[in-house]
Amino acid sequence: MPKTKQSLEKEIQKEMTALGIYKPEYKKLINIFAGMLFQYQEFERQFEESGFQLTEEYTNKAGATNDRKVPLYTAMESLRKDIATYSDRLCLNPKSLETVTTEAKNKSTLISVIGELGNR
Image (spheres, rainbow, N blue to C red):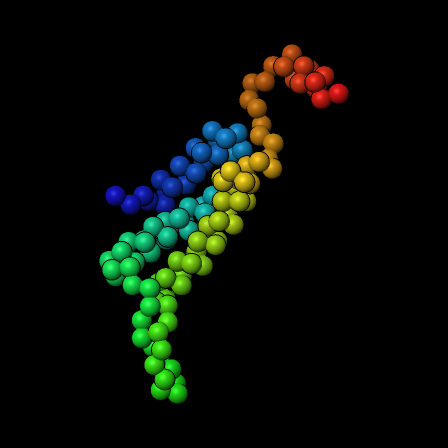
């Protein structure tokens, strides 16, 4: 069963919260990212229904017939790149997460002081 855009948004927020990187200011980016994931999910369904057709015959203005990628597959390729970019921005992949300092909740003062002493 396909996920709704709203359920994808909640899932993304939950993942970011679990990673310690969620902030309410990210809601707009999360909304856009969830929309892209929702669209991609629909494109995948259509692509499967087409029998995973990658190319089609196309006759140009000069009358020459060639094979070209189907527009659906081209849209999926573009959307994949955008999804990768947004997952980087939201730190939802291992590579981008390496560069982020997460916020620790309920961190005790003693642990903070010990951590700072260890960095000297």
